[in-house]
Length: 217
Image (tube, rainbow, N blue to C red; front, side, top):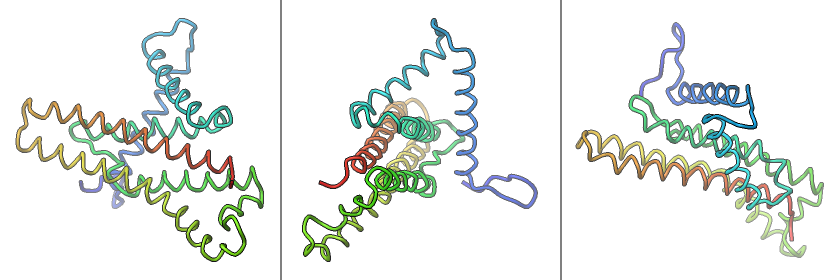
């Protein structure tokens, strides 16, 4: 898709414009959901509570009680990625996660947070996990561990980007060839895939941060 006109003689790429749109929509929905909290919630508050509770249960099952402090990060990533993924199903829109710049930005946040947590919790001892179990293995283990950690943001970003990009291409082809009722099963499959990719990103992020909390063994 061509860049969108932002203001005179300045352009914003489509994936950036759609990302801003989703951010604004989520901020508005969050405000509306928390503006009038009630012990007897309406439908909208019920839906938001179900989503947040699902994220909370997933985080507790994956990271335990220690992981509760990372709930804002994990829940924000999960809700944000899910909406970005599903946006491409709406005619006239495209998924920002089908652009590598979007997925890399989120993967870098997880990568940086992982090592900040590791250093904060364990101090200098956190570096020991890069050196191997015994000193004479350090020349071999150090580059292996560095490559292993650097591959994490690559894996997070490329996996999400590749799957959502593939979805968008399949949807475009199917709508072009059979634009009536036949694409409905494809829509259902894409919704399922969007949910799975959101779950995978969240699980990997929690595992990486959880590993930094535990430190080297």
